[in-house]
Image 1 (tube, rainbow, N blue to C red):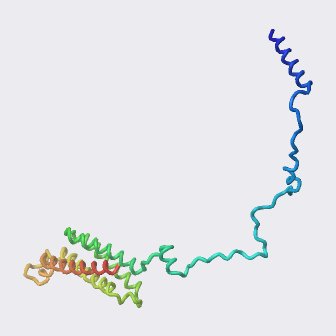
Image 2: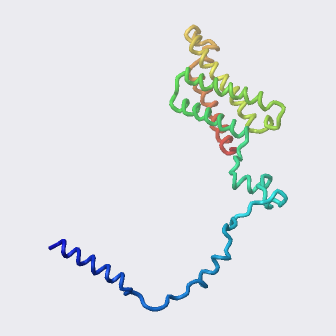
Image 3: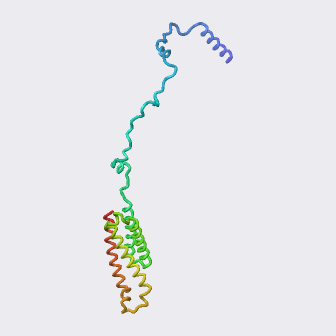
Length: 203
């Protein structure tokens, strides 16, 4: 039955095809609508034209390297100077000494920080010798404070060695007495505070 049905469908299909049934009438002419394709070039040109060797290059603006506004605002150039950087290092040292005095640090710690202050003052003295910076108030105060730190550190160090061998009434014994050492540390502390404030204000 299925085979018979399939055969009938095939017969009808062939009959319709062979009978000429389908679209009747004339087809529209579409040739004029596609006439431009005959005249169009086979290859289109590039949308981007590279510069010839003889053409001038575009006149781009140069980076304003000499313009202070460009340097300060765009590049954010550092305004610090080597001297200011050195002063920042000194401030750190003086703050360590200030803390050491506030907590009554032992002789070894005091003398270690004092030695760093002295070394840094010597470094600055060599670095800025015969330069305008050696006439700055901050520079002179650091040198004075370093000399004072050396005197107090030496006094404290010698006191640990000699005080037990000296008679109580001896002038040297009074020099190395606890009261005198505390007084010298107090003088040094006041100089330290004023120098530290001066450096912070200047920076």
